[in-house]
Amino acid sequence: MPLLEDLSRRKDIVIQCHDVPDADAIASGFALTRYMESRGRSARLIYSGKNRVTKPNLTLMLNLLDIPLEYVEEMPRCGLLVTVDCQYGAGNVRRFEADDIAVLDHHKPEMPESPQVVIRQSLGSCSTLIWDLMRGEGFGFASSPEVYNALYYGLYTDTSSLAELRHPLDRDLAEFMPADWSLIKRLKNSTLSREELDVVAGTLSSSNLIGGIGLLASEPCDPNILGFSSDIAQQVEQFNSCVVYCDYFGGIKLSVRSSVREIMANELALFLTKDVGSGGGNIEKAGGYISMECIGKVAPGVSPGDFLRDRVQKYQNNFDLVYCGAHNVDFSSFERYRKLRIPLGYAHTSDIFPEASQISVRTLEGDIDTVSSADTYLMIGISGEVYPIKRDRFESSYEILEGRYVIETEYMPVASDKISGERKALRPYARTCVPKEDRFIRASCLVKATKVFSNWDRDKYFYGAIGDFIAASEDDPSDVYIINRDIFFKTYKKVGKGEL
Ligand SMILES: [Mn+2]
Image (cartoon, rainbow, N blue to C red):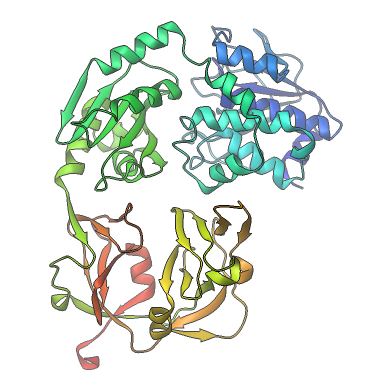
């Protein structure tokens, strides 16, 4: 039985937000109560802790959306306790005794997953998780726009005004249906109290410049306020990019901005949080979280501020830049590899949308923009990674196979028309192909992180970490690309001496 339906069959359901609830927690809990009502059940929505909700945008949210959030000191009668946007027993939520517990959250897991404990750390908000579950169980959002508006606002506030969307599902929620923009506008323009204005001022008055990156520490604050400080710091001429951070739930939260082609904010955020948290966003704006506990394992005794400063420094000292068509990498000196004949997917962009449509393909790695034409195909790799390829290059490199395309990936790519907004899943358009026998590349394992600027997209680059491979086709060394280490070993084989 699907999870929410299963939960809705319990008696005396109580849904608990974390202490000092934010818009994401409130939206998640509210949506869940409405789901229970849609199944003919009722649930109480509560929070506890030392402080009541006073933030102006939150009290307005509760009033405008008519959200029955109750402050409690003691647990009401409870058959099932569901914590949203937090985990049962964690430090940020009052612990109440309960026999039957469910957890729906998107923070760093602090408890084992189980059928009733769903923690999706890769999502930008808990609202995304709740929306995805409710949509999957047939909740009618169209007839309950207030539920969608709440979830939209939860996502909006947790991702610094949608600038730091991480997962394709976050983007899907943001575009699912039109939000009530006049409502969102009212809420978003009542977020800053005068105390918070002081926090912003304090942050901006203490900037450091490390190489070309501005590093600014903030007093603990709401992610939105952090994003706001970051937006201002980005305007500083000397900063190629900037990182603003503050203490946040047992770690630090980061907001990252970039103004130059050589640094993509999302990639910088991933680098800074690698192995110690999570990060993501788009090329200009991104965010992330670093857990204290993880720093303790990687660099015991180091403060989060020093840890971050060190990572920022490392980031700048440690990468090569390769511009396609204008590089001096000697690929002929690299080892020769053959692409294994593993079936891959491909689709004609002109099958999906009429020719010359501006399209955007949503994948786990982010959105890829291109224009549909009879000469542009999309390749779908073994891990569901997508990249555009020109028809002549495709025809010289791949053989078409008969039969249906079947591959399971964590998130199946979706293409949308950028003008009309129409969305189509790639799967029905995908066909199967295999690399031709005689396709060789020259490749080398990276000993230094490298950014490759391709001809496909002027604004983005492919980031290769140490251990990934840099490669070029033997007959066209100007076409340089990066291949993820795991994918490389699954799809390429070194050509032995006898085969040369
Ligand atoms: Mn949240």
